[in-house]
Length: 392
Image 1: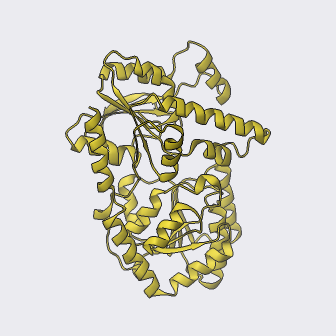
Image 2: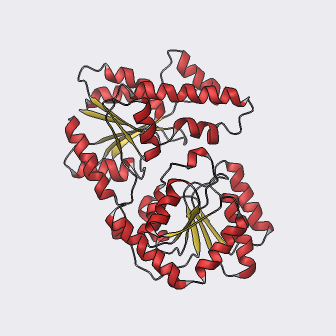
């Protein structure tokens, strides 16, 4: 049960397909909060049964619409999802999003008593403070209290589940501290794309550097743009790829304005949407993978999938010099860590790597070896299936 879209790289392409390939019937229920698509159902080419529930919008204002659905008996998308579960009668339910925990108590009361897994994707309190509420024009103390309230509510609901999954050690440490008696496993979002490598020599790849994933200021979007301007002054044919949407929309407008004002149209390819099956074609054409995160608490423990996918395709990395991801890059000898939010340092690092072919090749080979030996999904899939089988 999810709200991140049908073809989520973890929930669909890894977990759901692992269950399907193990001989289980899988029903994938998704709430669509972003598009205007109507509710519908069907079966994917991979044999996954799905139902998409359109978020009901009775009032244009987001907050008023939320209040109407929460405090009145009006029908909601969560009611529709609950009714679908009652018809399916699953032995096990996996919840992948906080909002769906609102119907957890109802799920626990179902007469067929399904086992329930809660899959935590993010450090809730830190993300609320550092990212989602950052622009809210209210006192910080109120933000802090609200974030703590939401985090505690999530823990209370999670305590009612039969098993908890997480994606990194930071989430794991918090679960063990707040829910020490609850069964838990860190199911790292390692890559499953080893068979998609084209083994193209670095010097023959199209893009000198790339950033793959959602673009935001705190993920280094502006840092990369200013670094691009600096690099192009020395290397006019430098080519950068952005593969992902910008959040908020105003950032996307700023990116386009910057590119136009600085004459960088030939130096930046920005592709905002691509199907999962097509991602490998881009990765195989990248020389250097970028991950210039700003230093906020929400970024200290995360282990983004892009890190392992860069390594999988033999792409040397430039990441920020803090947190778990820098630790992995240093340990695996797959790239370099630099000070965050310093475009001049990023530019110098790009020029250094591009002019040192032997160093690039060493990082490339080390990345592939690290994925094949340690950071691959097959290891996680085995642990995941063992948990599922133990519950049902």
